[in-house]
Image (cartoon, rainbow, N blue to C red; front, side):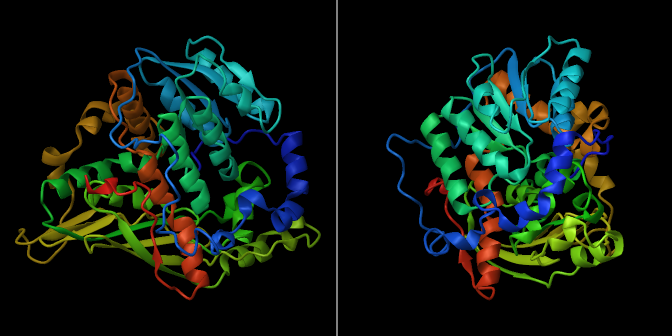
Length: 461
């Protein structure tokens, strides 16, 4: 998720060590940074083929949470994003934060102070190295775990939590390879515990409003959606702290859409993906890489800086087209390397009209004023989502315009009332799948690549 607008933590000794070693790690890393192309001989060649279903596994689609009068939550990763999500959970009724984990002790202590300042008992802290979360997940006073670590740790944390019998979620991306995504699906089904991505953009005001308009038939039959993450992150990527210590490394390893879910999640809801439709295949292409190289030339003056040893391979603008089983299409884009206003595109076109965001505007066949865009304001009274009606005033004091609080509140509501989560492991896997699939398609000259069916046929329900 994009960085919240709060103060940076101080640069720790661990951060300095990581920064000094960054270039070698970026150029020589394997494992978490292994390109999706390494899978092309197996899952990458036939991504539509599901691995064998684990013995005893059953679908998690529509499975409710057990009811919890008090929801006991632990957070792994208490940097900028972790503390932002913690703030939202602390604003929800009936939540107790029982444990926190970070390999930088100062950050864990900052998060713990937020908990005690909110009037709760001090949570247990786990700060003994990169794998401290493996001890945290074994505690019996945790109902739900969320990870806000650097991307390469999302999957290890979630798999450990599922093995320990805990519900778990992550920031985006949910996983970076097809194998990781299938591993999460299989582990969730085997454990009978939910594993999902907390995609805040699905809970944005416009996204929830438009979702209700789509399902009320305002735009007719849906035909096409547009989704993106277009965000100038050059300064963040080149910082010597926080995300700058790890996020830039992904640009040295993958020519792909590295961050598909913010735009794709809401559009998937508009199109009822996994509720009667599914992503069928996609084609992808990337421009050349220029933005990060130019930014380095303009801002990193010392040629001895390790950043000059990095070679960036992520094309500046990646564009993909997804076709669904019902014949609908989606434009999906990613660019974090160039100067531009922020946009997630967030558009839906149907047989009777369309919505386009940034700025928000609506056109419906026969509307007053002829073939001109109208504002979204006139639709709010009828189609504002009840969650925003209920929570809007409180939500707007939270992160990302309020969507973060609505997301957290709704998750807690599902846990309190024993409801199925709005987003499940199959949604989460499908929304992140364009990361490895786009890399495969780009490398093969924009060849169409099949989407895996993570539901194993249950999308038809």
